[in-house]
Image 1 (spheres, one colour):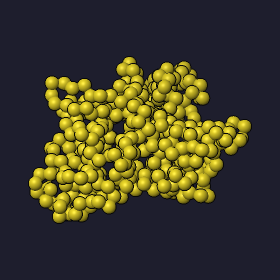
Image 2 (tube, rainbow, N blue to C red):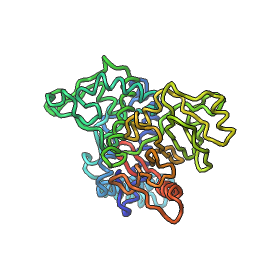
Image 3 (cartoon, rainbow, N blue to C red):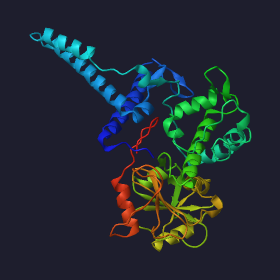
Image 4 (tube, helix red, strand yellow):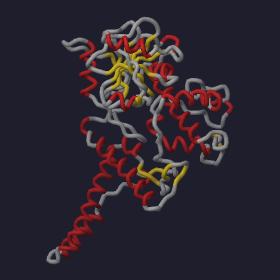
Length: 397
């Protein structure tokens, strides 16, 4: 994780506001007919965008840009006021000119980056997409990028440029839409030499988005295996949930912004339900309990809500960095905002040795320091006190 120094905490809301403003501007441009669509979503109409990934790591440039925007905004406000206040019109117009003239704009290369029509496009992160993307990645990408996404595939050494690893902050520093564009259109070195072929003729749009979802799983799992935790925050993937004998419903509708505990069940009964969260039971595909069994569990006060989307077991195991064959007994906790945060290994039902995989302190995954309360309460208090702050294309936690 990357964390800003407390003295630069203002950068978090500033970058978030810039990102929201860009997305809103693109939406307005599309609504007004200034731009059309690209790959089924509104296209970004300009060749440049704000480089939040640079502003994130250079607080000096971010501060200079913030002052320039404030000065320019003040100049505009003064000029508008002058239009309606005749007595002070000359003074207000003069002040507006001075404010605009002395606005400390940094060099454009420090806060603008090249954009593509799909820069701000994205799709939901889902279990179904992860499952589909895993198969596509194995067929189309692993030969160069490696089975684990570390850029060590059998063909990697023969390429003009060694493939980058996704096990790290790379995905957090790249907009989803720009990753999509590079997969579809390919990549070239500065001299024009092709460093990655384009897959526009081999993969559909949905295929490409599915591969990008699977890359997020590879990045998360690889970070855990390296002992560094998740390199970027990981959201709960969308899936369907069935509770007892009731019809299945989307996870988001069932969870309703409550904490979630995901428990991998292989043999034996489910854990007791707990009022501090909603429990989601993960079963190996094809081994789901019958609705009548789940209804009986609910009557006994046991957890009874089951992930019914095929592939959920493998998706959560991948994000936890655990081989699917050894995933039984593992537990994961997601916070109220839907971010996965902590993991307990098999045999640790009390969370006494829980690992905080998404922490604000940065660096390696952390063991939770217990207070006078029980280990689980310490963990939940820590998670609540450190909410995830995330800006895509430059990230903050």
